[in-house]
Image: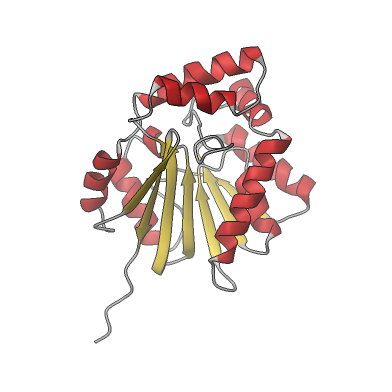
Length: 229
């Protein structure tokens, strides 16, 4: 059974270029994992208003963004990795959908304020070097009432949790070993729920809702509606 983190672990950052990024795209593009992205995209789209705009920060190969676009949602993807942007654009063309994938930095996003109804960030936030700026930018580009959804690995994940997670990925021996080693490394820089609550409290969002499942955590942050005079 896939948990939220099964679909979303990622070693993100400038190091995810070239062969490493292409390896990651292959590992994460199995039929079972793509089915998970389709399911998640359907759930997210069902909660959005007609004509909604979605930004995925650090979409990697673009699998979730492509599935969201299939539902009719207008989707933009922003990733620091040029290789990932190339792969994601190819995946969108192959799927016959339109997604605006761009190279850019979450701490300095090239979008107007109040542009998006939903911002999604999967398995990348722990790697952001300027997390406060990232949250501030997510808040800025959201419309009033919009939501930022951050899904990532939890620092509280145990070795046993990681073993169960990888076992459910149905990977070969080598990829299983590599994946477990990567997850153990990523855990060191991941946030515990209490840490993320403190970070959110110092952001323009002021607060967040956190749920945990398996080795992952999901953080929901809402931009408040403008006060009526």
